[in-house]
Amino acid sequence: MLTIKRFNTLSKELLAALVDLYQEAYRDDPTYAYRERKRIKSYLKWLLRHARGGFFVAFEKEKPVGFLALEEMAPAPEIHEIVVLPEFKGQHLAEKLMAEALSYLQAKGYSRVALWVGEHNLRAQRFYEKFGFKKIGKDGIWIRMEKNLQEKDLTSSHKTAKASSTSEREMVSSGV
Image 1 (cartoon, rainbow, N blue to C red):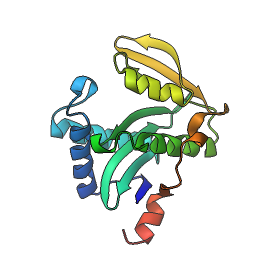
Image 2 (image 1 turned 120 degrees about the vertical axis):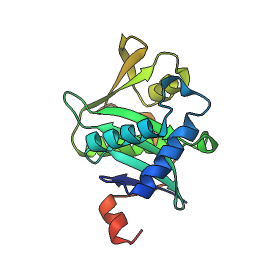
Image 3 (image 1 turned 180 degrees about the horizontal axis):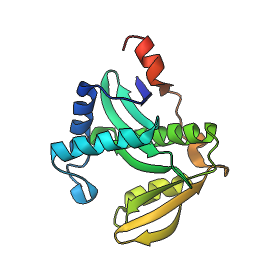
Image 4 (image 1 turned 180 degrees about the vertical axis):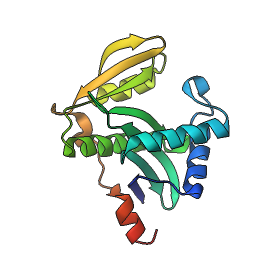
């Protein structure tokens, strides 16, 4: 069963598993990725530090299979990274992570969210457009996209019934 949990801290074991996940996810498309384990580990720590609670990890049983990191910042929170293991692509895992993050931001009262995506990453651009993100600018190889969180989006059309979500507090209290 797929579960999505939100984290404020990562154990050494989970951090190492997320480094592996990141490397595997970007193995065939390293254009916009870090390659060295040490650099990836530093990047994940940076993401977690800036997420302030907006770091979501998807698990299949006990194994992390994807994650999404966002940063709550002004004037709009930003999604920094969505990573999914290749064998889980096409199973709507990225959609479930995105729906979880958007729901989290809406519950916190945010009215919009933004992100940067590589100009040649057309698959990711189409993915974000499905969720109502619109291109608003460009800087070098990066395209800026934003979404109004008050608009009706496609997240309700994605089936998320098989995903459950728990906070880190719930996870710790359950002994996982």
